[in-house]
Amino acid sequence: MERKELLERILEEGRGGVLFQLYVKTGMDREALVLEGGELVFYTREIPEKGRANASLIRFLSRGLKIPSSRIEIVYGLRSHVKKILIKDIDRETLIGKLSKLVEEG
Image 1 (spheres, one colour):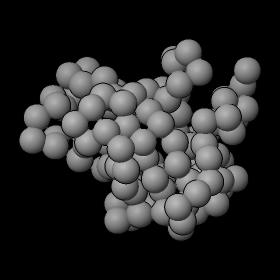
Image 2: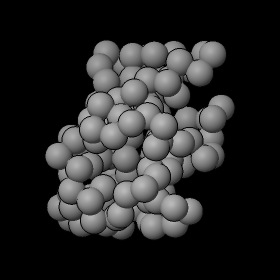
Image 3: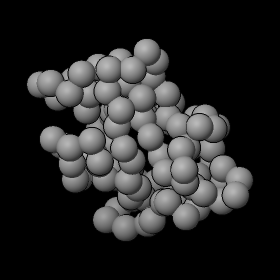
């Protein structure tokens, strides 16, 4: 399955934006958003302490998607490696286009 098809399967519209789930791997040697086994995985150098990994994720998405960090919300999983992200005020097709340029193959 190609990247865009996988993203179409992962992203869902709702709650004033687009929701998707991802897994965070902390303490890595790089920052990247990767498709692994049909799931989105965020690699961060940060450790899961005092919200540092969450801040890293929001900063990465804000820069990569070229949207303000105020439009990115972690709606589930603040203290977990599995997170549900809401990108506000965007439609699904636009986000699929932006994410497909940002995501690396795993």
